[in-house]
View 1 (cartoon, rainbow, N blue to C red):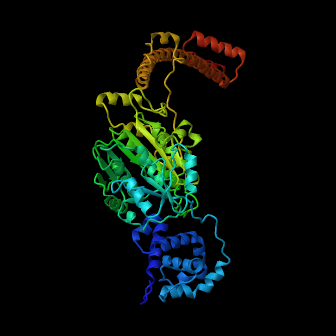
View 2: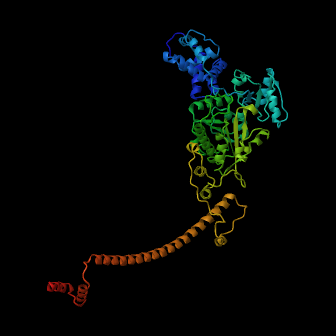
View 3: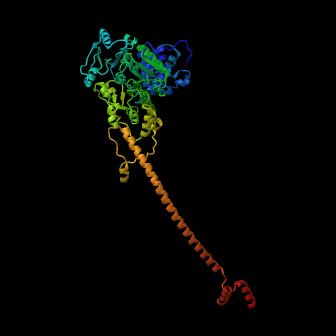
Length: 607
């Protein structure tokens, strides 16, 4: 930074710091702005939004003007904020500090280059006009008390009598006058005010009587609906809005385990919990994937709201044009792990709610599908029953019936942030998970261990049968070898079919029937293998005997042929003689065993 006696206005220094943190992904804009507790929050927020909106334009201006090359000690984040204010904000810069003077010195250069720069369409702020939602903290005051206080301030209460007329209710929200507010028809302690109503300086907000929380964010806890006295686990608790909502529903009676891994977010969680005046919440700075029933015993209700892309947030700044598929796969891998942990590690859990502020199928329906396909203990239930069956948007049709069970909040229709909710409940006797995939499940091992240990953590069986758990496998799914299917009744010969015991009645559970059938088939296979082994051995012995005989005969024939060939070659190489002489020689050889010697004597006589 520059050495100067005149300081840069605090507003610009604070804005530059927040701008850097947002760009680096260390926090959300709203959270960072309100943590600073600056008196001019609106100006900071607007300036950061404008700077991010002009991000590509600012980069080109800085590159072409070479301001950072010529002024290497200039803070690049502060430079961007000051340029934004000069060219796109107030069009002037106050004060005589060195950074401000430097930017003013480049003003004409910036303006000259700015006329040639076209803003890309991808740099947009994802904003939708929606009302202001205010959740009454019933641990501090009742809803009626809050309504009376607002009425005393001049607000006019409006009502919608038909709780099942959701479309009419949405129209009424849009038509709210500037001085009107209305209670929500789904969430009892939620009040709705006109667009852009400000509460950050309101006494009720400062003392914790009201909490500024979007309706979509309130849905998961409302659907979880734990009764007072319950034990609840919030697996990804920060910043703490949903955690304090759980405590309010419990009427501060029971126990809430609030778990957050990130240390900085954990501190935010503690602050919000403290301001809510809830006493039933216990905060833990832990990695939830290392925890189980021993860490948090007797958990009955679980809230799973993991880290996600945040693509459904209407006030989120779109820094990148599109989420990379790799990042989505990585997020989905984590979401699958944490949801599976919720459904397998806590044997007393009755209901589990999974939610994201994402609009991507990879983080929503596909996560639900992969977890349900390997879980025998939980079923998916229809989410709309928890909102008076008065809702408009549900899961994708690409997932069939499963999609209909899930619920979406959509900004353009529901006037909220984008949100996804799925509800799981433990299977009771006689019930089953209709979306369970029977093809790739280790029934035999599951049933044996269940008989041996009773109710147990069956996460290991689910992990064995996971197909798309790892983000690497999500990115590129390798081809897997198909397992040998069990023999069906049609494939077994009729004779052996008669010997097989008949199937048991249907009154037994599906899992037992399948295990028994599989055991019978396995036994049949073993018997068949033994028989086939004996037959194979006999056939092989016969083959070997035949082969040996053939080889022996071939060898004999070859020997005979070899002898014949030898004789032929010998005869060819013998010298030619007259017939009479040859006859005499042959006769003498036959009569006298010493033929060759006599042959020599004869030759001598002749000579």
